[in-house]
Image (tube, rainbow, N blue to C red):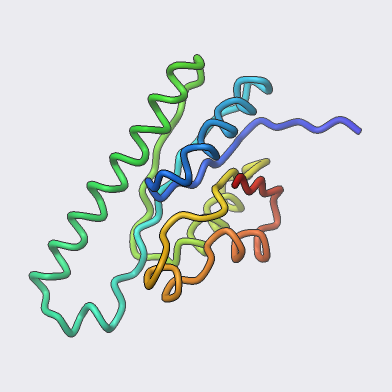
Length: 146
């Protein structure tokens, strides 16, 4: 069986745990001469945050965008070291798993690469396992890297 991998979505949340997945995604792209799109999803602030006030939400949104830009920069730099061009995208106001799955489907990605665990603790409990939800709902191949 021959498998063509032309487009890879590397989902990142900027955590240390995702760096191994980034390296795998870049290496697979290099081996297959594939296009890489690094994706960072900013989750919907939700009703709980809305109750804290608009200025607090704006500060959080700014912080999350800055985190996203740093996370994507790491993927771009990792790609540059291996001669792999990486496009980047931040999607706002989506459930992270839903954003990854929808983006991969809408852009005909051949593979989604992500880490097994990113955020932990309360954040993990509130959002759930992003990797688990992506695996469950994606109609694309998903490589989950520990």
